[in-house]
Length: 456
Image (cartoon, rainbow, N blue to C red; front, side):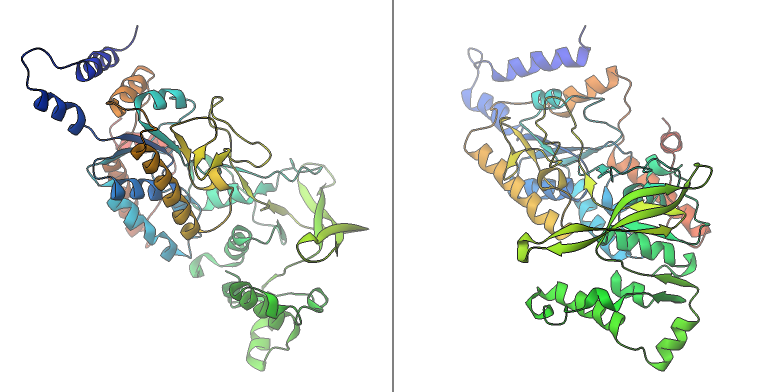
């Protein structure tokens, strides 16, 4: 039997949409049915893509109401759980997201796992439109022998561990080894390398690593042969980074820098033309002891150039392997189209193909590329497409129950959503605990403890 609140909505919706009763004033009835409720929209995911999509919708439609569903008890996604602790300035966007969440036309619904606690089809029935912005929650596997050995982790999980992501709080990597190998050289890989190299008391990208105290870069000049002639062809940002690497690898340091490097207790390096082939086990087979790399060379020119194996291999001893070869989105619901090869929801400018009223934004839309500014532009475009469809009459007309219907479903299933004001209580608790330890905050890691603090 349906919950009472659910039955009430069906009657209420029918009453609102049936013809005006005899003797009533049509203008009053029309005002009740068309002005009382603007479009009800739901966004799944409270990271940058979710908040930027919401921001655009609220700004450009004065009566839109947006509910943001999030599987974590806390908002902000990778801004909270993916930004390195020595880059706090990146987290300033949280201030903007907080203002959006405090709008009387926006509501945060945390601790709700879409696809498990509530189906996408149920959201579609309750809202005029649904936007999937849940990001990339998985990682690209290496698919090489030994990947399952203890001591091998995805960089995504490692970042989640040192950033206090509840699902990674028990990762417990052994950091007592002398050598760690990071597979990949993207932003996440550099963040991880910097965190590993930096003493906890001095947590200050590539430029920062070169200047880290008691740390010495080791770059092979042979890897940079012929690069000087090609630097001028590179885009400005890539050109500056490449020039920095080239100088570090080929120029003799001055006396002061040489002295600093001579006293370094830690070293780091970038190895090029290497591809992981196998994780090597310790003699007892119980953990990682090294990694075998295939030596590669470039074949072809320009955009067609590809790394091809030379037949040579190189064994590198290490006690920790972190795979940073890309994030990957997961399918959220069997009824939502998903491309497992590309790891995205098939879409056209954010409109999910073949499913009217369903949209996507962020990494699940375009893949795990770009920075926060890229996500902002992408999310604004999805919001624009949704509003165009609404204006063109392509979305359902008439009132929708929105959260009233979903709340009844969640209650019947024993799910306890948390609000943004709940998050602000947890936020205050984290800041309070951090003050005692001389830190900006002490993150809460246990969802059950969070619920207890909220009186659940």
